[in-house]
Length: 268
Image (cartoon, rainbow, N blue to C red; front, side, top):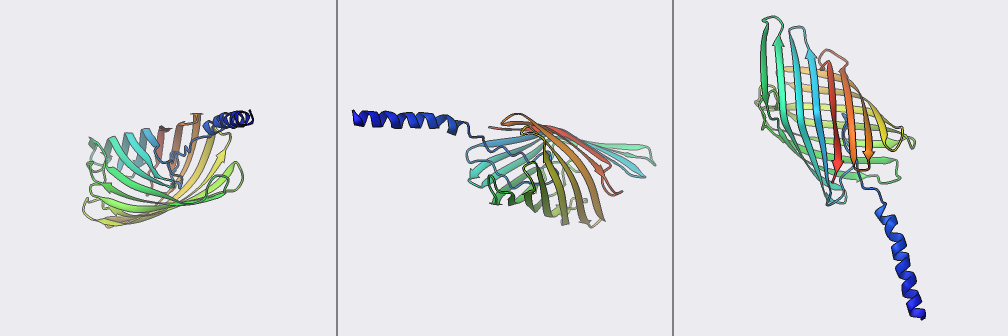
């Protein structure tokens, strides 16, 4: 009887503990809709998909106006280790329309975009720890026609760090350095940027971000510095589903005037 009672108590303890394990929330950490990066990786064996349903950008210069629309920009993230994930990003469709104000001529290019392969490694931080950091290395294959695609391959590295100031407020800094494709489609040049952002968590379902971005582009045809400000918000109607929106505005003449992005993410 003592053995039977001991076995029964053990079984009951296991059954009582099972719901607690089942209630553990999955690691769901979309990079979007931020301009900056993230150190958070997908759990092994899970697939994380992020989609830009609509990404529209306008750049109004004295001699021309450029409108670019991208849709079906799909990022797939696969967890391959405890702190490691592989990424595949593909732009399904893009349309770039450039109107020459002086000659009253319009040039339109449509087609698919480039394919980017990346690996992200989480380096520091964890649950209930305020500081986190990571590194992401990527390479882009020129599968799309310029200007929807870059015209030639490129590569780069992204280093994101974040510190939670409070339970609701966090500051994030993302540094990036690229061997970026030349506008001519031949060769590469140095481009580097820093994005600083503040994230505020209104509830577990709703968050907002404010960001400033500075980018230096040393393209042989035109060296320029781009400054952007962005606001974004995300809503999670379920633990593994997110809907989001981002609005960005150029702060100097070199940067695009306006960009609007809508989309979401889901974890499988």
